[in-house]
Amino acid sequence: MDLTMLKNLSNRVNFKSGQIILEEGDQPGEKSDAMYIILAGSVDVYKNFKKPNEVKIATLTSGSFFGEMALFLNKTRTATVVAAEDVMMLEINRENAYGFFEKQPEATYLLIRTLCTRLEHLTNFYGNAGGVQSAPESNFEETVDRKLDEKQTSSHIPGLFPKGHKKYNRTYEPREPFQIYEKRYTCPMCDKVFGAATVKANQKSEGMDRDMRQRFKGVDTLYYESVTCPSCLFSSLENTFVKGVASKYNALNIAMREFLPLVKDMFDEKSIAQPGVNADRLFTSLYLGLECAPICYYRPEMLIARIWMRISWLYSDCADEVMSRFAAENAQDAYLIAYEKSDISSQQLQQLQLLIGELSFRLEDYKNAQRFLYYAKVREQGSPVYRNQAEDRLDEMKAKGLS
Ligand SMILES: [Zn+2]
Image (spheres, rainbow, N blue to C red):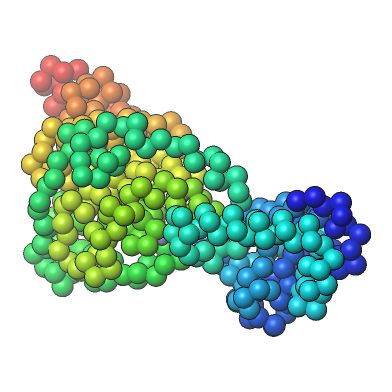
């Protein structure tokens, strides 16, 4: 937007760095109904500002505008906007709006064009703005070229599953369905509120597999860990779901639009709240999670590893050992990347070393098995249980002549 013609107008306002310009939840007419065009400086846009779940969803610079929903549609403010530095803006409110549109046809034209572009993106990918007022346009260009069809696939959902994946017509029913309840989630990407079946906390442990798969009496938590938003298909594991980065919403929509018509029925709100879990649906949710992770998180390495691990367990439950091994190999690769890249606590580090050691052992990669089991064994601050497991495994390798 050409700003020179706007800078001489009388309805300019200035905000100092850190000053709140408008606040999420403000009712129409409460403070101001204005929309703002940034002439100089920049602003940050937040959801849940100053709350524990605060998320910065965008930074807007000169030429951008925000707040139009309140001006045109009388909507409650859906985000908090704070001056990131000293900022000069044009304020268009109820009083001066007509005059502005009349005297500034070029600016008005550009404004309408930008609004139409946003609307087109949103209706193409989702059909609802989800309350986000101003999405940075750059996200579109970044991801629009993503080629999902480069992968070799063999399934009813093109582009999602790897070669060799089959249909696994199997439904898991928990032995103790009363251990399942409907947990309410708010999708961090599109704000959709929905319920999904979840296992109650404090399950009685029946031990752990060598690859750290937890076993519980009466219910298998694997079947309830992957969460998919029925609206935008954002998918993640239960304990990371709410941490999706809302400003990546547009990129997510572009990535998901090919899948949406093919899988939407699978994730209808009634069925995802049921205790019985269909294996094909869970595979879809987990593989969608792999698509979402690099788009929707700043540090996706560990999440990607954890999802591959769960995919491997699920193939194993479906008696597809070939695919289980394939997924375990991907999990090993992903854990090795996470090991290099992630900053993790000492206890977690030992757990990760043990896990990589065990996975490597399973995959007959004895060099990495020995290396990581040794790390886990000598980790002083770590847990003695993990240390012992690592030691036992190293002894076993020695006895079998594998080290
Ligand atoms: Zn969503």
